Length: 144
Image (tube, rainbow, N blue to C red; front, side):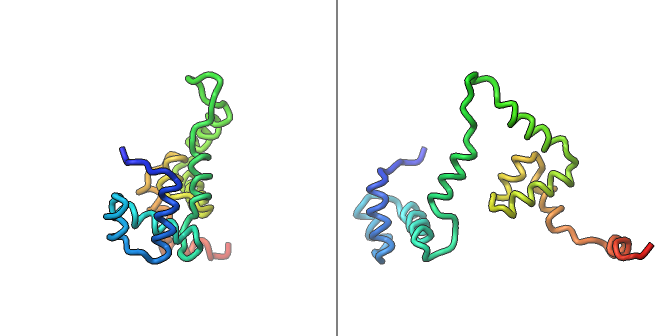
C-alpha cells in the first residue's frame, strides 16, 4: 500500500518543485522518493496551467463519480444503474464500441469506457481504427 502524505506537506513540496528546486535534493531532504516527487511536480504544473492534462479537481470529481452509490441495502444496487448497464450490455458489439468511443470523446479513459459498456479493448480498437474496404466505400457512394 502506498504511503500517504498530509496535503499540507504535499502542497509545500509542490510549491518548492514548481519554483525550480531540484527533485534529487528535495527527495533527500524530505525523505520522499524521487518518482513520487516527479509525479507531484507534473500534477502541480498541470494545476498551475503550465502543462496540459487533467487538473486535480477534475480528477477528484471523476473519481467521486465512479464510486458506487450508497444504498439502503448493501447487497442490492440501484435499479436505475442495473437497467443502464443491462441496456448497454444488451447492445450489439458494434453499438457498444460506438458508446465506448462516445465516452472516450467526452474525456473518459478508453479502458474505463470499454469496461463500463462491456466490450474488450481489442474489439474497441478494431472498431476505432477500422478502415473501410473499397467495396464498402463503393456501396456507400453508389447511386441506386
